[in-house]
Image (tube, rainbow, N blue to C red; front, side, top):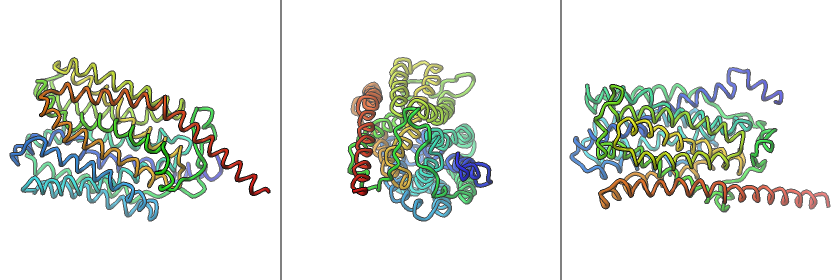
Length: 434
């Protein structure tokens, strides 16, 4: 470790301090996505609307969170995190407070969906983009830890929000928790800063761990012209579709499978499953991020995506059993949540750190595409076929296809990409010497 890095690691504003603040900020904005299944029932009753219409809110949340992320990432790269991330946290809290007073489905779209999507998107892409810059030697782990905050955060709120809905109703719950999320997020954001310019781009032992890390920094327009980016975009879209289908539809298919109101260990099956899911969804992100730092990104993708495909297949077969439903839902999320550590670390390894936040913003749009496929379109497919088997069959196929693409296509493409960059650098050096 260089003197600069050693000093940074022991100072109050060290990279680990920044990681902790990023983790807190991510936890503060996680509930709008991960406890959404608790709101679908009360919202359908309040507005007397079908599930597919209510689910548009969730899709708007994810779409705005993702489709604006390139611009949000650019602003964070350009002006720094404090102002932008504070704004994101404030908008996230405000979205719930305003949604509490919504009198129509359209108002719900604008408040919970649009404002919430903008706010959570600023925080998410800003924090992840910063961490892959702060930790070149532990890129997968660092991205996984802050992404875990986004998965773990709802563990603290799932049962309290569920109890509050039952005891105090929808409006009170949204108002109270919206204020809490906004205040906590702003306080965390005010302490964050960008890494020093002399932070190294490549880990010293990258090659020994099978990591392909580039020293060259790609501008977003250069990255968008490469086949590797678009392959990663398709892969992340398919994996996002799989997980977001489960997140957005779990309340509906738990009811159809007859397990929603069943008791498991004395607790209601649905909120218990959601709580376990938040834990495994959070745990998998730093775990597989750490694994990828040790054995390479694509090798880890093969293992993780394969686990989700297998778990989801078994889950479907035994979904009518309450205990099995709860336990296997956790395994499914253990095989899904790591996409939020593997894809940003792989992208930064491939295209450099200078524009990491903006570049990841473009890839993160895949999450928005997945929200459409896994949200209203999955609900529509269920209504057309009157069966969840078809919906599950589609996303299971996506899991296995993405695992195959990771090892058989992405891995050799990135290796060839590195060789081509090395050749170009050698030719440029010869030209300069001549």
